[in-house]
Image (tube, rainbow, N blue to C red; front, side, top):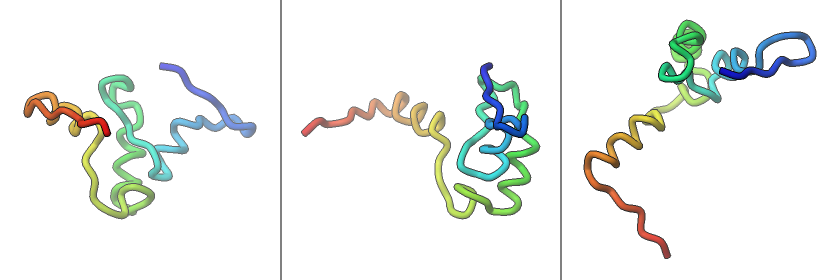
Length: 72
């Protein structure tokens, strides 16, 4: 798993998950940011302020239902 650091040495991935605009994807992170995500969710920061479906769940649902996107 790659990571970038801010100028102050803080992990960009950690910061994004903690602030709420990004998700911890356990398939790739092995849950490394799960606690930060739980805190963001509890505080309703970023995407946690509303409701949404995780992208990997959305994709899995489309695969099982045979959903096809129609191009215009």
